[in-house]
Length: 362
Image (cartoon, rainbow, N blue to C red; front, side):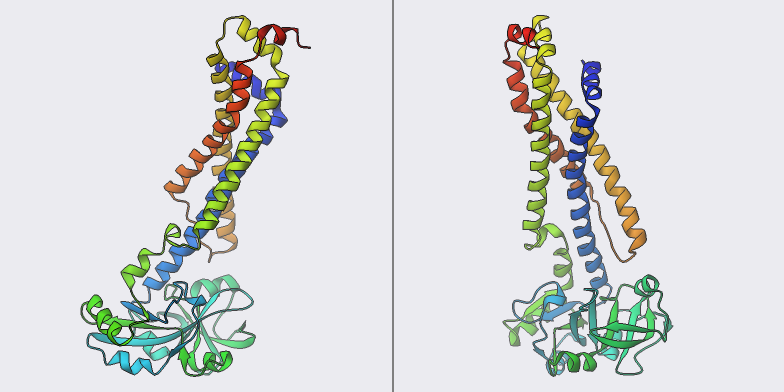
């Protein structure tokens, strides 16, 4: 039976290749796009963790993606937060997206931000020397071939690279807070406050919530737990769309392919039934053929995903693509499930064919 299945696939190589490609496309779309989403979210969470803060204070209804949180907090809250029992360090920050590269920029008060955690570890250069100085991390410097003293464009302005710091401090680019406030015309306002505590962070959060009851005050452990794509409401419709589109592609291609197989092999099916093959034997034969197409498609799709992943990472070192066992398993199950669903109707139709009519069919 196995030799017959392979012979059937080799008999129409172009159709087999197209069917395998369709299944592979479903697997690739799911693994690559969700791997890209998971990778970006995970890498962002790791950079946030590297800041070294214990709490984050944001405006009401602020996004967990800082670049989408407006600068609406009064900077004068810094002093009020600093006086809260259990608070050791407070740093006001504006998070803004660069309009040309869509990368996140942190506008920081260098002294307070540098005191959080381990602080900046400079590989070259140092702190801001002027209002239009920028600090970049080593990945950004390597990606763009920048060194201290070079010029770069951010927010429609030209900046001088004053320092190259080790990665993992939140953003990849840092500019002076006061300069950003002037460019963005937000006055003395910021997007968030990073807080480092000396005692129990949860107790500190409760004290801050007492005078900022409407604001979002997040513990870092709580924030990092959200850095999974499945926990982000905005990602779920995207994930479901990718799964649905992939499943429909596989279902329709396999359905068309197997239905064509039935029309072309009516005589062979009639011979099998005349030789004593039961309806279940015919159904099993066609289902196994469809599942073999699915297995081949899964292998090609996974191979293509890892191949494209390596190419993308080599071209864009700042991009992270995280392919997890959970998504691998889901990709395999969806591909095989789509192949099974697409082959059921053609298989049942073949099983009910009249062997007499099939044998006289020319």
